[in-house]
Image 1: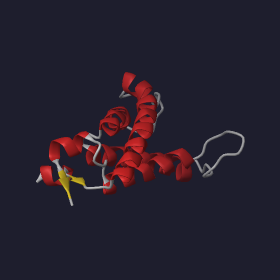
Image 2: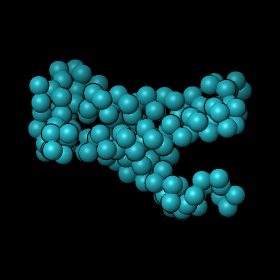
Image 3: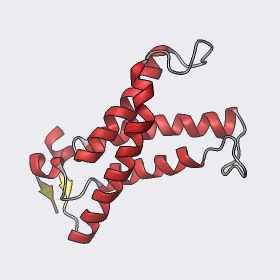
Length: 143
């Protein structure tokens, strides 16, 4: 059953190349975003954080590990689900809890980056990693 879930939709060459570019660029960004967090996974938000340590660790793992998984195209739907969950919380925290605008003119907090990464995660979850991925090599393609 997991094998069927991880089988990759057969995409045209150009679409697969575009998905590869999206995965690599977003994956590198998430490795950088998650690197500092993975150094102190249970406390990266600080001592007064409203988020329990184990959820901080899941976010750190989803960002750092998910970035690596996206670059490789390995277990892409699972990595995308983790990143989408983390970004949904980030959008909520910035948009609702903090009241940040979508786009901050002149600096300051905004939820634009989290919203963009949430949509990237949704695309990779629903469309898949494309034919140039470890998932396609390991689990095969479906039409």
